[in-house]
Image (spheres, rainbow over the protein chains, first blue to last red):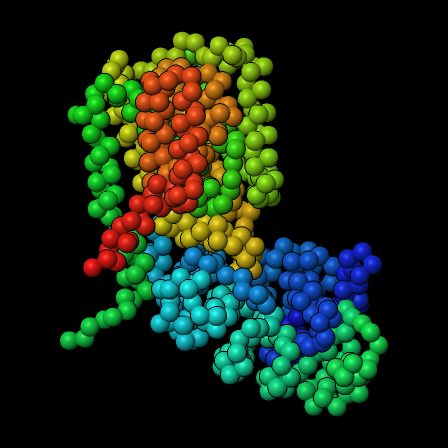
Length: 251
Length: 329
C-alpha cells in the first residue's frame, strides 16, 4: 500500500491572468479512495484535465507510478492506466451500451485497428464488455442505444467505459452529477465496490457522500490545494469551514 | 424448455452482419441494365465508377465525420495513373487498377497527416485547398497530363487478354460493376470490424475517443488512406472504361458532385453513395436531354427537396417508411 499510484509536482496553469492551478502537489498512494472538494471555480476539473493531458501545464510534472507521463498525449496515458470520466455525459449517442464498451475493450487490447476481421470474431472482447456492464447492472440494457438510456444508466455507462480501459488510477469528475439523491447512493455503492487495485479520485459536492466513500479528502481553493487529510480532519479543519461558510478570502 | 427473450451479446451483433433481402435485391437489380437498357450500358458503367467514388467518400464522411470538398484529388490521381500507364504502353487493366489505387492511397496517406489534425469548417477549407492545388499542378504539368486538353491515346487492353472493351459498354459495365461489388464487400467488412466500430465512435464523439485509449489521429489516417485508395480505383475504372482523362477528373466540380450524390442517397449507410450516384447521374442524363443548359437547376431543386424532406437522404427516407410499415398493424 505504500506504493504511489499518481504524483503531481508543482503543477501550474493559467489562462491569461486567471490562475487555475498554482503549485499543485499531489501524491496518491495506491488503492486509496480520494475525494477532491472545493467551491465552484476552485480548479478541480482543471486539475483532472491537467493530469489526464487534456490540458498542458505551464510548469510541473506528472508521474503515473514511477513513469513520467507529462509529455504523453491523453490516449497513451489511458493505455498506461490513467482514466477519467466526465461531469457532463460524454458518450457515443448512437452506439449501444455493449458496442461502446466493446470498443473501449478493443482499444485496450490493441485490436481496434483491425479492419479485415469481423467484430463478432472477437468473442473475448465482447464477453468482457458484457461482464463489465453486468457488474454495473447494465446488462439488461446492453443492446439499447446510449441516448435512449435513462440518465442514471448513462452515468453508469460513463464508469463502464472507464473500467473497460483497466485503469490503475481512475479520476471521476462528479460521477453523480444530475442524478437524484437516492440514485446517487447506488452509483457510489458501485464505485465503492470497485477493485482495491484501482486508485480512485472523485470530485463530489455532496458532503455526505464524500465522508461516506472517501478515505482521504483534498480541498482545493483558487487553484491551490488548501489542505489534505482524513474526512474527520477535514470536517474539523477551521480553514475548510471558513471556505465553506463563506468567511474565507475570496478565491 | 426455456425461451430466451433477450438475445445474447453475440447473437445480437451477429444479426447485424446478415445480408438483408433488400441488399440482395439491390445487387440483382444492378444486373438489369444488361437486359432492360442495353443502350445505356455506357452510362451504367459511369454510374458504377461514380458509385464507387461516392462509397469511398461515405467511408470518411458517413462513418468518420470527415467532410471533404477535395475528394476528387484522389479520384484524379487514380485516373491519371491508369491513363498514363496506358499512354506509356501498359494498358493491362487489372494491374493498372492496382497501381492507380496504390498511387492514390500513397497520396492519401501523405495528406492524411494534415487531415487528421482538423475537423469541421477547417477541414472543408483544407480539403478544398488540396484539391485546387492538385488541379493547378496537373494543369501546369501539361507535358505529363496533357493539361487542358487531357490525356491523348489511352487504350485499355482486353480484360484477362480476352474481353475487349466494346463500343456498347458491355465489357465496361461488367468490369465496373465487378470492381464496385468487390470493393463494396471490402467496405462492408471494414465497417463490421473492430476498426469500423472505432470509426463510428469517432463520428459519434471524437473528443471522447482518446479518453478510452484510442489513437484518434492514427485511426483517421488509416481510414483516410483506405478511402483515398478506393477513390483512386474509381478514377482508374473511369479512365480505363472511357479511355479519356481530363482535368475535370480532379476538379472541384467532381468533388462537389460526389458530396451531393452522397447526401442525396444518405450518408453512413454504404448504399447511400450507390443510390445517390445512380439517381444523380440518371437525373442528369434525363434533365440534360430536356434542357442541356439548365439541368443544374433541377439538380438544385432535387437537392433542396431531399435535404428538406428527407434529412437522412433517400435511404434514410426509405428506412423510415419500412419501419412505419412494420410498426403499423
